[in-house]
Image (cartoon, rainbow, N blue to C red):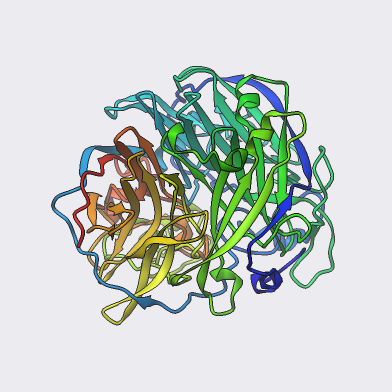
Length: 640
């Protein structure tokens, strides 16, 4: 099925139904790797700062060696993390969630990876990248955090053990860009890292989307793209890992099914081409690892449905040379009971939380506001994969079920405004001398950017005590003003019964890109970014309870200044990006949370000091994002 507007997918009946997988795809063992800290260095800024295959605008085409209009493609940076929402939806009434002075308790809090790490790792052979999609996992006394495209590993006290590690090197590829060579050479494009620690096997799983180049001397893409899955060989993530590759171009090559993706601009003409496995995420039950993607044309305008892959955990940890993955295509009515977009698989805090019914069950959640012309919805899709025990057999026979659960209205949120502050990159663009140094092609007097607030897609999902916990960004009206808020849901996936639901909102401010972690005792923490008239982008959270909902807002780290990155300004971009997802990970009686925030500020004169744009090593010329990692003990729910 090819669609340019998700409303078409509403033709799928939103009723409980089931389907079996269409087939299998093989993962191949790519050998062993280990995280090695990369040397920080390189020039402050060069003529080639952007990976043109991994950008920020939702255009029709990208650099692709297999076809397309090259003149059009040369200006495109819109391949990954695509959205389908056309506008924001109506905001439902909310109330100010307020600020808290007590429970839950922050045990420790420290900075993770940042834009400086991203740009200058591996001797500066990295691109300037926004947004910092974030993966976090924790276990056995370790915390692993990654964002586009670097990783750091900490101990549970926040001490840095290894990092920053550039992901191209970790996954055994050439550098993202080798600036020492003439002509320049380019390694594969890596994006969308996710991470998971398995509480039974005591292994770390790390996931990225990788896009291959047509040849190493251009940024053109070959069309082939794959999920790379690194599995730690022990409970110590600083040691060796085994890497597997799962092809996801789904055009009939490399053993993939053919999903009918095309190459061409929005109005055509079209020719057959590769698909893109966008926005991958990872969940697990006792038997399997479950990966999901949003499938688009790699170089065309159509969405083809979410893809769900089921893989045996035992096979991955056995270092087998070849591992089978079961695939479900939710864009195919013969393969899926309903349509899916960002179908997020659940993670559980311990092995006692997994669902054993149906010979093993993995639950997933998705939203559908972007299916509707109003950009609002009163339904969530509750998915289940049953018979996951069969993943360990020669003939896996998983069954995919889906049911619509009635919930309070949610809708696509507006962009998030920021508190006024120093914006030295913005001020550089109209300056005749400075703009030449950063590669700005024209004088622009840009306003302070409003941040992307996501599109009401489901974010991180947890399953424990027979309940699913999920949340999404939504439009919310507080004091008569529409802002970006968070809608959260705790429900029984067996019957759709709602245990609790509600919104988190802060008057005169926005809350975005949330992630929920839940302990085995059913105590939840939801992380997010707090930004608006009163707060520079800040790392914040609330406690969550399955009966009484969300408590007041806590700030783990107050922002020091506004976001000042290239995606917020013309002529670089027209879509001001923010972290496309945060992260949370349960660890015993605590929850580790990670969110994007801005931990630095500097004025224009400080920005001009050599090396240009680094402001004393706190940022790079084209961006200033940071991440904040906090360990939170949920404690007793303190309510409103």
